[in-house]
Amino acid sequence: VLSAPVMAEGDAICEKLKTDDVAEVVVILINGVTQPEEWATHYGRWLGLGRKGLSTEGGNKGLVWLIRPDAKEKVTISVGRGLPRFATVDYSPIVDAAVEYFNFNNYDRGVTTLIAQTDQVLRRIKDEGK
Image 1 (cartoon, rainbow, N blue to C red):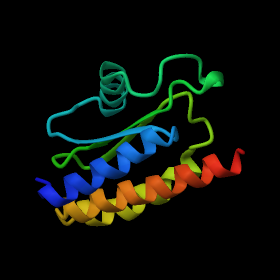
Image 2 (image 1 turned 45 degrees about the vertical axis):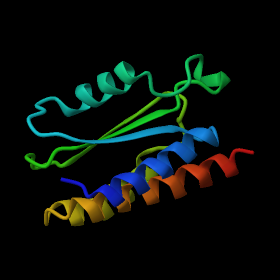
Image 3 (image 1 turned 120 degrees about the vertical axis):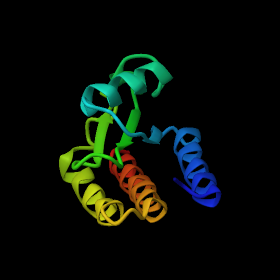
């Protein structure tokens, strides 16, 4: 569904977030998920997203964006406990911007928007916390 350049660009941004110890972010597109919140959370745990340890010590900074092309509600997020300041007020505008593209089956543009805005917001939150 996604073009190779979009996947490469998204991977690079997500890797930089991890390298800079901001968060570990993954975006997955999959059909047929009936319990998206639970699925996204368990998928993040299965991947081992977010550094292990207590959230107060910098651990559990994983974030899963689940995109379901076959669902009415196309975007689900699972945020690790180590990212308590990344709240609904932060990610709702990101979802709103990306869904505009997903609703018209433009997954390249939607995922690009999702990742770029997530990167900006997470970095702003981290900088504010210094």
